[in-house]
Amino acid sequence: MTITITFPPEYPYVMLSSLLIGFLCLLFGFMVAGRKRGQIFTEEYMKKNFLKEHMEAFPNDKAPPKGGYPDMGSGRYSQKLSYKEWYEFNIAQRIHMNYLEQALVTCFIILISGIKYPWPTVGLSLGYAFFRILVLVGYNVSVRWRKPGVIFLNFALAAMFYFSFDTVIGLM
Image 1 (cartoon, rainbow, N blue to C red):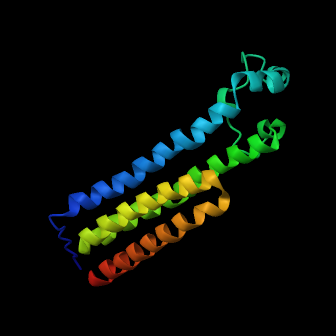
Image 2: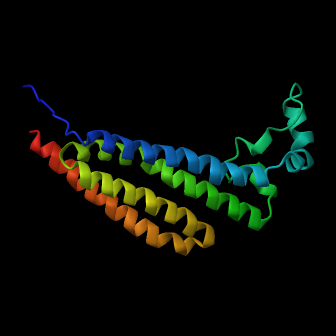
Image 3: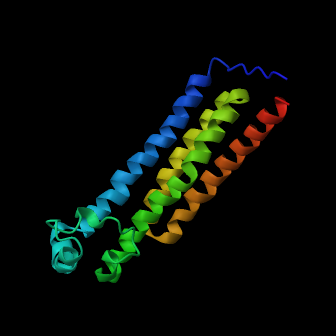
């Protein structure tokens, strides 16, 4: 059995919208989680709290790692943060990790649904990107303010899942 897939002429726009989702995920990592990490796990904080312990464990190192790596918000380096610092860092981590958790699946269904539904997929992808930014902004205000963005980006995701399923069924 051979399946022939013909891509519509609008398909490059579908690919661009998938690339946008991936690029924004990368950007969120630097602009949200990375920025907050740099503000909290400063060189001064790391040396003040972990220099002696780090040098005992790793005598060939000059200092504890910059940025608090490998701590992702609930490890040894985070234990000495104030509650406010810990909370803000974990919010930033959550914003990025939630995006990261969905990025691969989102890009994949964009590429599938765009085969049969190119323009609706592009529109939903751009909506997804917009609402992902809304989640970032809302989450930084308050955890409960992320919900409007989450609701609408999940709607866009569900619609693209439907289009993907319909596209694959059409190939059978």
